[in-house]
Amino acid sequence: QVQLVESGGGLVQAGGSLRLSCAASGRLFSTYAMGWFRQSPGKEREFVSAISWSDSSTYYADSVKGRFTISRDNAKNTVYLQMNSLKPEDTAVYYCAGRTPFQRPGMRGDEYDYWGQGTQVTVSS
Image (cartoon, rainbow, N blue to C red; front, side, top):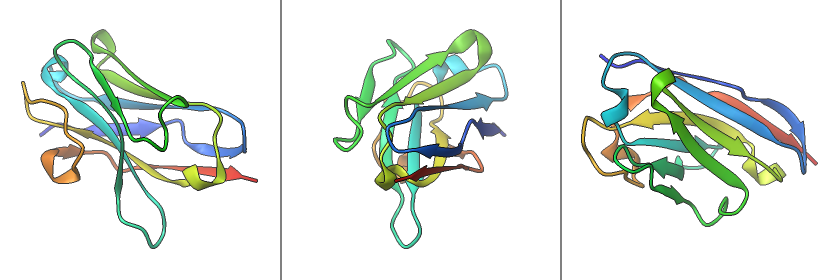
């Protein structure tokens, strides 16, 4: 079973930055498409960003495009989410997710097989 562990969340003022990390267990990380999702109280989980396993193509929700950057370091079994120009509406629990090997990145939560426990991001106004 693949384990994903997020870190890097916290409290930041609007306009600030945070970098989330997600460390994966196992030897097949380089074959996993990876994604980030978030969920705020009373709202459904929503797609934030994804990165392919093959050529590191990246995908973003319109709400974060131009502010967030996803990247991966296969040597460290880690995917990152650099979040700049944060807004209060970015406040949520952020979850890292992975697909089984050699799958394309998805934008739906049900396309992902592995999930982290989540990390809280709070942006104050």
